[in-house]
Image (cartoon, rainbow, N blue to C red; front, top):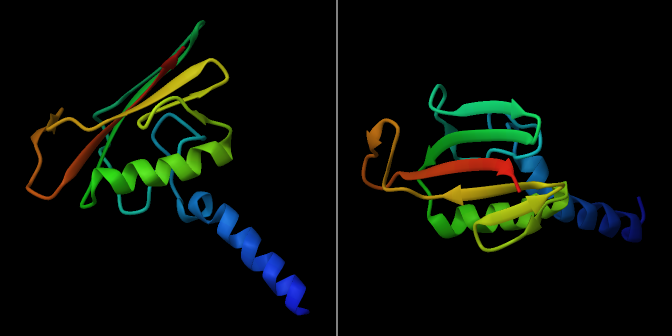
Amino acid sequence: MTAAARRLVLLLGLLVSPVMAADAFIAGTSDVPLMPGLRALSGDGTVFDAPGGRIVEAWAEGGMERSAVLSFYGATLPQLGWSAAGPDRFRREGEVLRLEFPPQGPRGARPPGTLLIRFYLSPG
């Protein structure tokens, strides 16, 4: 492989690496990846398909900083067609995705050092 080909492969790997790093998706979606290091909280969400669009509420938790989560989704979601509508809000094809960081979720408070994330997808 020539040096130019190696550089091209490396560049392409860097461009797609955030998306490829995620091997799971938020429950009820096939277009919102679950950030590596987050654990989906199964059974705590809602998935509803309506004539006006889908409504998805999903929860995840992990031992990382809020800024790391926002950075991951800020870099990854545009590769999947989403556009930023704020630091924690994204839009695509008539849908809005919000990332929220409540102090406690459907199962109550989390252990210290555990970040809770609520993914809320709705028409908009």
